[in-house]
Length: 446
Image 1 (cartoon, rainbow, N blue to C red):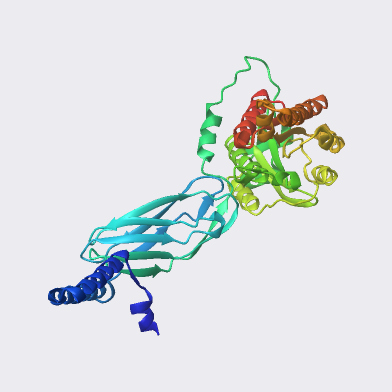
Image 2 (image 1 turned 45 degrees about the vertical axis):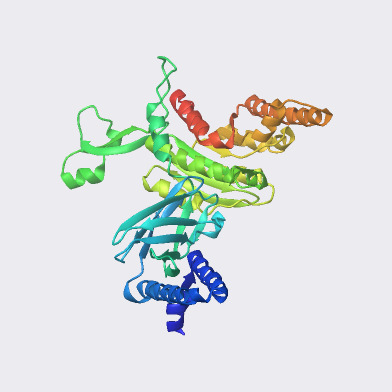
């Protein structure tokens, strides 16, 4: 059975084979009426069979099949263009016409992943293509299938290369460098004025020899005993802010935009903001919630914090229930003791939806600087500015205007209670959030 599969199961005939066989049949029909042609036609048929045999021997017996290898990163970036390469090596002494089928992950729904190339003798080529995942999780790549034929082109052989592997799709991390440059380019445009210090506490810097005039309350008695002379602790003002990204995983965050959900845009913005906060020496933490509490990562500024947050964001999914803001308030009061900047990624489609949660947001804002980041409905915006051609269009445009106006009322309602807000289209969410953070950082409002 294995021999039959090896020498027959991977054998395919090409269109050229059918054309030549059809020509032989037509020639035999003509030779029935013109008997003088029978000998010539018979020789042509035998010669064709000889070519088939030579083609088969070259492809299946004498020479080795091409070798394929896939090159893909261990982790892919969600919503971004990711590169994949396939290396193909021709081990035969003649040129091959090849067709490569790469079994890409099911999530991509790519049903025509086929690439045709000519591969010169004893050469290696690199075939590149791109994929754009639209959901986080494990992506399973399958085998690499190669169909190849010689210059004779009568037969085609299939070679299956075992190349199954699993890669993980994480929140968008490809463009983090671009946002870093944006943060470095920001300058203070608020003029020259006295600003209060951000830090409200001090942090340990070093132990040094006691010098006359040093505060005796900072003497380190253990270090003094070890060294035999007075040693004091040296402290410096704590310059870092404490920032928490709070992600709403409720049903409204399931809304799609260009293949990604609003939750994915919030997660991508959180990861980019994490990178900027660490660059600015701020402590960054994470809280996620829906109808029940999700992940909680305490604020820290260690370099490993970005990786910790990425690993948590990788697993977050949307819940299909209403988010519990009362529970969120209680968790913030219990978990976050120091006044912090809270960046809340959520969505309010109406003023009534906001008013149901206003009391909890106001309570949070009493103890922390709260920044509410929510989404502009771009489809409604397009409808509100579209030209009305009939009565139905007028009704649609009027409703779209009303809903768009409610979004502006949400901003005013938040501002009335001293709550900062950012309203953004999903595709510009990361940039707008980072700009707002840098603005608050420059103003030293925390």
